Image (cartoon, rainbow, N blue to C red; front, side):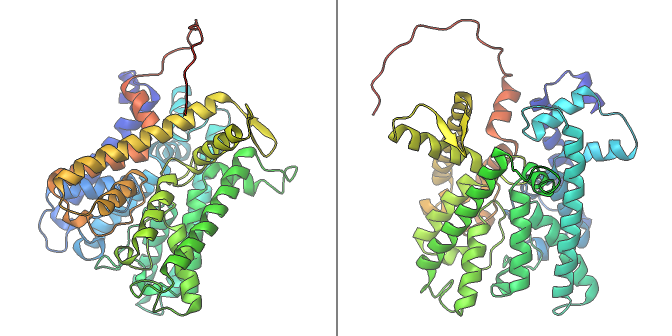
Length: 446
């Protein structure tokens, strides 16, 4: 961080370079012979892809995590997931707090940018809460999963599996170490695994601000902030709608929900609705889903998680704001009102910018991959959206990507994790307020 300060970089530029540095270190560690079970070095492109996927908490893999990597390599991946999910600045703040070092104003500005906050007031207090919540939730989930898996494997192995998957799922990474790319398909009807993993995904995806709001709910005036209300209501709506759509479309599909009993169908439908919130785990074969379900999951992945969380996508608040803008326009109203609060016009512009930039990136990457990869367009679109939204769900294309395709998906994951606005500000810093206005013009729309 001292070197970053010396270079006089802006907070967005520090975040970009910081994540890039973490990915580079991860790449070098994964290339070591000790990281692979064969004792041979992983080639640089595959190592870079794996490190990027872990740091950007995506979960797309070109080699099977459970069989290719040794325990050392898997621990490297787990550490990258933790650092990438919470943010390298959050981890740096942890060390600063442990060493009782002062958090400078510049550090607070960077934390503000990293946590997507409008103000740096109380930012260090929020980081403390982030670290505590993460540790408690991951530890509790790891304990429950360890007990469950102790019935299927030796206790030590079960504890290791519990810790790895708790970290992976809470940070919405989607990496698993069961082997053969099968994720959690062996536990499609298991209530304990389903409940714990879905809880991890949702708690990591709603964002630490909402989590803090919920924890403080009893100690305050029993009121939630507008942000928390929007996030919780939209998250619940998307999960319920997603579960119903997948349940209906896949009910008779012999490759997914068809062979399961009724309760298994319910669990599978809900899990496949929750996991596009940028988690990447799956309990049924994603490639076996009907095209309607696959395209619907693309939409869920595009929306993604919530601001200040471990997930990606355009975020639930952005989607809510866009829906609110459409409803207001159809009703002939000037203001967007949510839960009796009027939203500033600049929020609408930001939501529109984020959505359009995301669409343009996904379209551009999909078009390029269509020329480099000889696969169906829906498969390419699915993989691209999964990479941008840092989800990690795959229809099977990722392990078969060309070298050019792997690099392109790496860049897409990097852009999706940092955020397109952060990248834009890192390349060209924000301009000051405009001191003049042009005359108003009129243009026909629609």
